[in-house]
Image (cartoon, rainbow, N blue to C red):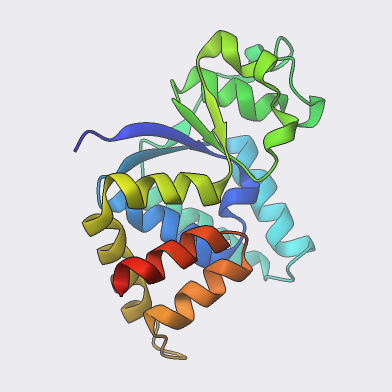
Length: 185
């Protein structure tokens, strides 16, 4: 399976369970994750200011992401940001996706990236639910294996795949969770 590049917006990797699912799929070779310093800085800020995560825990999470995916961080995109025509607060995201050669930009804020702003760069903007549904459709074995491994990795407290799917549904990917349940039968 050829790993295609997908840029992950901050909102897609903010929630711990969803981020873990997305990155486990990338570890399985389903796609190649991309992000930027701007996205990781925003993630760190949101984790500490909105979720109450300690500075150390947020820094550790980002360090682990960087270590696990050393080629994911897009650089040299800053000069492109001003020319982007999407929502001003997300211009750095689209600029990094363009510079990184992303085929897909994964974001809950799809409306912040109107087609007129992404079409010139041939980048599709998809909701994480749709992105995960596509991976389940294209790579059902790898996707279900990633979910099983993810659930098995949680020890305190232990978690079943069913519990994990419930948490994923609550994090905004309810259709994916439902379809994964159906596949697991």
